[in-house]
Figure 1 (cartoon, rainbow, N blue to C red):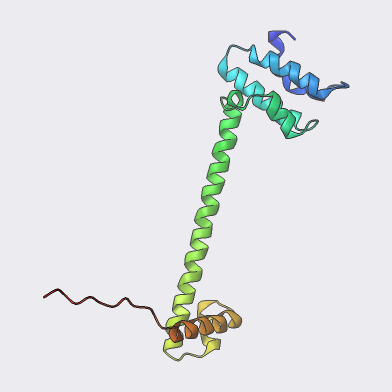
Figure 2: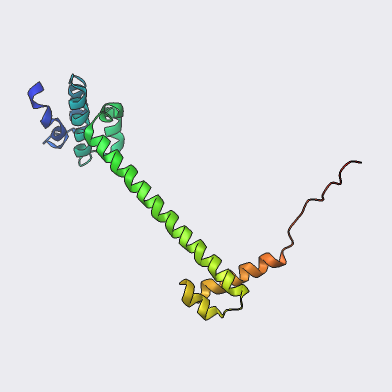
Length: 156
C-alpha cells in the first residue's frame, strides 16, 4: 500500500478477503511505517474502530498497539468525553444521595416531633413504606446501646 493512501487503511479489514485478521496484520505493519505521529495515531484509532465490524476486540488489540492509538486526536476526544460523562454521572449520583440523606434526616426530625407518617411522606417526598422503614431503623438504633470505652482516671 502506498503512503498516499493511509486514509484507506481502516477499511482494509472490511474488504473482500478470506482472512481479515491477516489483512489487519498487514495494515498494522503499514501503519507503523507512518512517520507523522499524529497521523499514525489517527489512522491506527480509525482502523481499530472500523475493524470492530469484522473482527473481535482481542484480535484488534493484539495487532494494533494501543500506545499508537493514544496519540490520536480521535482517541483523546473519546477519552475526554468519557471522563466528562463519568464526572457528570458522579455529580448527579452525589446530588441524589445528598437529597435522599436530607429527606431522611428531615423525616427523622419530624418523627421526633410526633408528626404523622402520612405528613412526613408528603413533605419529604419519601414513600410511606420508606418512612416506616426509617422509623424501624431509627427505633432499632435507639435500642442498641452504644459501646463506650471506660475512661481512665488521671494518675495521682
